[in-house]
Image 1 (cartoon, protein in one colour):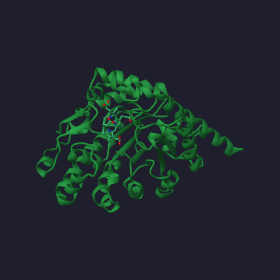
Image 2 (cartoon, helix red, strand yellow):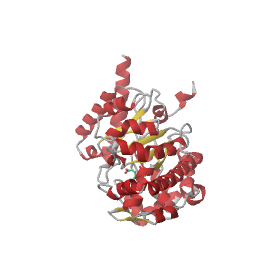
Image 3 (cartoon, rainbow, N blue to C red):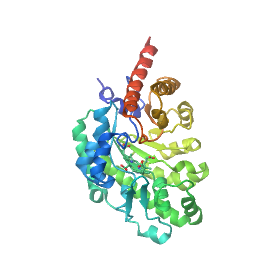
Length: 352
Ligand code: CP3
């Protein structure tokens, strides 16, 4: 048996190798839609949960114990590297993250570049604990934000609709923008590298909000920095490069890097794959809101996505964005089963 045959389906798919069925994991597969998560959340703040390796490990493993998902993703948050950079971070109930917004060069120059081994040691300990628990059976995904998405949180102070402050700094203060993006790229590259050293077997880079940019601006202001981050871990472990509302940016995102490109539901997945080319894999793209619908709708959508890709190796099934907080657990379980069952059947029928 050669080495690749012993690899789990998720890692095979990252390398565009054939798999017995389509592997599936879900962004935000551990979260508020689970009663076990909500019970822990009553006792601890979100940051306490992220920073306590025993709790973060338990939460990472919740969806692995409940469903037959093909990968685990470390329980943490995109914004955690901001604290050791010197930015205060708060998660307010029902409102999401709140950060003191950064506007000028003076504040940018004060941002610190740190060593994750020291400042994010809790994350690296969690990774080691989770790997031990998973015992080689299920691969573990590490992650970070991409420089643009983190810059947008820093500048807007939280979530934004139009990214006016971010774009305004980008257009009006090129030096400030470049300094900020350079610092973020260095920090994020270090965070990813440390996660790989601690044992994650794949990386996902979330550029969740980059879809607000034109292709020209993406190429000029963002692509070189995302590339810098991805370059530091590529060839070590597979990298999934994810964004939303990015149909027009797909080719440029591929240029920035990634063995697999993640897509939301706003574009047909077959069309997205044709656009990026078949020399990379594709991940996605069920609308998370479909999981709020009846089981026959979920089944119809699963079939539509899988039929459209014709069992081409390199597809990782996922939602187009994270699981919504009011999603019924039984629908998530059914989705995982449906993807495994229907994608196995498609492969058997193809051999007939
Ligand atoms: O996917 C997973 O299961 C792993 C854990 C994970 C979380 N956040 C846990 C979390 C991951 C991969 C993230 C990434 C993340 N964080 C992103 C990129 C993904 C995306 O959604 O585009 C972003 C933008 C963030 C920033 C962030 N963190 C926001 C905007 C919020 C508030 C919105 C919300 O859903 O609550 C968070 C908080 C957060 N991150 C929670 C969880 C489980 C909820 C915290 C709580 O219990 O209140």
